[in-house]
Amino acid sequence: ATEMPTISEDGTTFTFTLREGVNFVDGSGAIVREMTADDVVYSLNRVLDPDLTPTPSPVASAFFAAIVGAPDVLDGTATEATGLRAIDDQTVEIEIAAPDQSFLNVLAMPFASIVPSEFAGEDTTAFSSEPVGTGPFTLESYTAGQGAVFVRNPHYWQEDVPLVERIEYRLGIDPTSQLQQVQAGDLDIMGDAIPPGSFTATVNDPRYEGQIHSQVEVATFFMSMDLSDPDSPLADVRVRQALNHAVDKENLLRVQNGRGQIAACIFPPDLPGYDPDCNPYPYDPERARELLAETDYPDGFETTLYTSTTDPDPLIAQSIQQDLAAIGVEAEVITQDFDTLLETIFTPGAAPLASTGWFQDFPDPSDFIDPILSCASAVENGSNSAFYCNEEVDALAAEAKGEPDQATRLELYRGLQERIMADAPWVPLYHSTFYTMVSPRVTNFALHPVWRTDLRKFGLSE
Image (tube, rainbow, N blue to C red; front, side, top):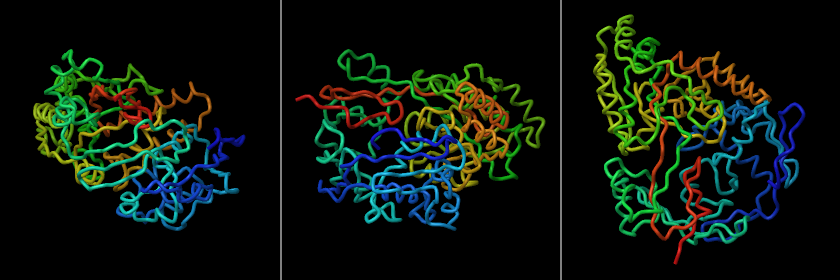
């Protein structure tokens, strides 16, 4: 768009004027055609499409259901949302059902990227392998499980960026190998954090001065408890509260070199609405045992904890496993690669306990409620690994989203957080600090607060 949209007096209709000269470019670097308002309407309807393969969008119901007519597309009774309208080639109108102070943030997310209908279609795998878009890079090649090569888009609408001509992504490399490759000069940027076993030696090595970058992340790591099975021990709120009291979160920081701070509630520091006094479940194994004694499981029970294979996740899971065993809960730890883990934890009943996390998509507390703790997100292949659904919470969240006064709005979200924590669908674990390393030839590198790396901005020295 050329500028921020005009918004109707009732806060429900957004009118955008599109920038001229923004072109779709294919993998060869050739211009396909200019982007128009019809493409915007098509792309947002496509996100809502329940027939996308191999799976529908996991964020559609949580982020885009506010658009008028979106629920009809999501349930398959319509193919287009009536709230998405192309007025002319350069003008788009989007209508939402109720005022939502976070909606513009949602439209700025990658899920809302604009794609051409003649190339995109319903097969997301096919389009991902040969994408056509308007971004700063085009895809030169992709090998599943190994990596991809991107080259500078010569027709990108922003002048003077990106600064590099070519980026090679390497997949399937563990963090220790990434670190070694950066130190050897074979890799420019680590995609993951410096692993715990190498952390102290690396950050204290004077040879790497200026190559270590860190950032406190607006993120919460947590252990979700699957509420989809009414016969599970986890269906009893007292059991979930007991597990909250059982976990020694100080030890979770110790196993990862102190990188981060304890999470007592949902919202992380630096997120609007964060409450430093929120701490309903301090570490108290004795209180955990007392709560279990009130349930049908006074001696504990057996369960399974899923986590990823990436450091430090297995160490964190082992620490949680020991804490739960101390109150009689025997948890088998199962590690999976990240893609498999996501498939598991977003399948109802598949992962009783899951060590996972959520990073902000945009700086608003709604981002830590709607996509991961709402009824709309408590669906298979969604992003609510607890399958937590409380209609009272949903109603409070809708009220908070539409509140125009920021102070009142944030107070509503703090109350909402307290309400969810009373239900205890999670054990909040920690808020992370991310440390990574780049090669000495990387210039202008800075960590992005949401996406970690803005590939448009960094350069390379000769």
